[in-house]
Image (cartoon, rainbow, N blue to C red):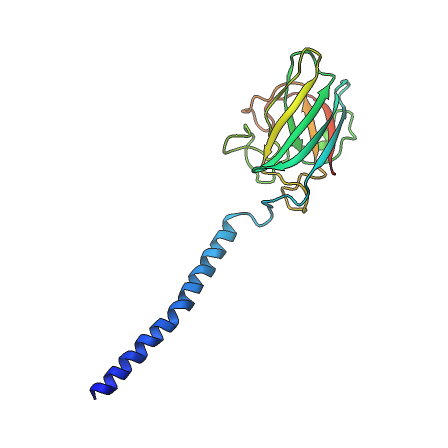
Length: 198
């Protein structure tokens, strides 16, 4: 009888051990599912392209134009280049906008700020901001701004909701106050260009 009880106890212990991995696997699957639902499924975390360019053309009767290069960096995209035709020493907002259409004379065809996460407008280095929000640029004494700004959140390529390829870059007449909704009280759109791969 003692032998039978011992055999039964051993069988139960082995059964419990055998079921432990499936419980752990279930917990890992649950944790994995929870992790995948914590980040929006339609947002990409990495760019599929290594670079893009923007040729900015004048809008709203301005003489502002320039060329920018974009590259993936850190948590988003870094924009560098040169924009001319600005008033000497002036400060201007620069944003990525939602539609790659610069056909309207005032660039209104580019729509609002690129905002795939539906956040409020704000400064790029704060928790709440649009994907297209960037720091202001400043023109030198010759009216030329050396652009070196970052957009947090967008990627290049892949077609996800936060893919910036095919969106527009807009330079505004005034600085962004980083507070006024939805666009920082940045004034008229004085230049517009479409983000193109390569």
